[in-house]
Image 1: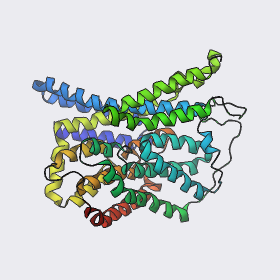
Image 2 (image 1 turned 120 degrees about the horizontal axis):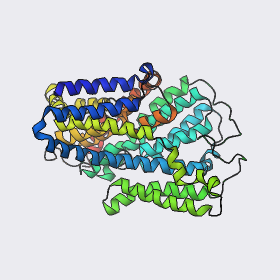
Image 3 (image 1 turned 45 degrees about the vertical axis):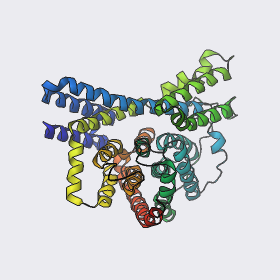
Image 4 (image 1 turned 90 degrees about the horizontal axis):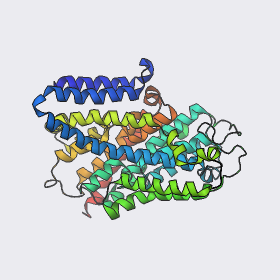
Length: 436
């Protein structure tokens, strides 16, 4: 039965990758794959149904933490966008040169991603790029590079990427050390593809349709003047997102609670900004209005994918695969480099979870090279395919990027960056190891 479930998983995965040729929405494929994997797992061992139910509940707990975090972040970004809060940033970016703009956007993404997290940052930056780059083809390149930069920026910060956060919470790495050791490799991972594009990027940014500043069905202020409270919403929104890791550090509660707290505060502020406005006019500027605009299909897509991977994890398939790698390759650096590349196909969260189970903390102490290198590889390897990271999936949903298009245009660049950064880490490692 295990083989059947693995085959089902692979077929489901292919259906997601080939969404456009087979004309079936990837969310439908993901949900079917996730539910069917668990159904077959339950049917294969009817005697253990109680135990399987407990495993499912445990996975659902972890998955819903990610989903609520996601929904909170998306709603906050939508709400700030409704008030045109991001115009504060876009109005200051004046360059019309695509190559210069790409450096600015990627640089901002890289550092913002370390403070917020790669998923939220990608959502914010794609919302910005929509306003700055009307030309659709050019915008796809920008969106692709945002994914690469956000994942690179997230890898070196304990709060920037889910996988680095997992290693940090698990006690495998310390915050100060991971920033010191991974900052340069992550930077290299972003700069190498940018240098390549410096010589090969062709095309224009395109002209703005000035009548409509807003990207979401035109609920913006058509006069083009600033909306009342836009600066307040920008600062409360970004402040709320930045407070999430602080909330986690102080309370030790899961990050999604911090995100929901930030959403609650922003919701109250948005209600108080325009108290005299007519209900119908006010609706686009409320959190309730923002909730109708968030991308629910991509939230369900996450649910399906993570359920499917969870079933493989519960059956022990991932653990077996890990020990198989260990016996085949032997050298941990090769294994971890491969795990990074594999994380572009399989979600990097369960991969890192499996790796944390594979390597014992007794042998590999805190801040051991294995953990640092794993944080880099799992964080940045996901950029190689668009479905390999949370940031990629979110951007794919927002900009309707085709899997095959990304494979042709961005995957090679992401691979270049990934290997360049990995080489930078392995070259620099001896210098850092002295201080351990």
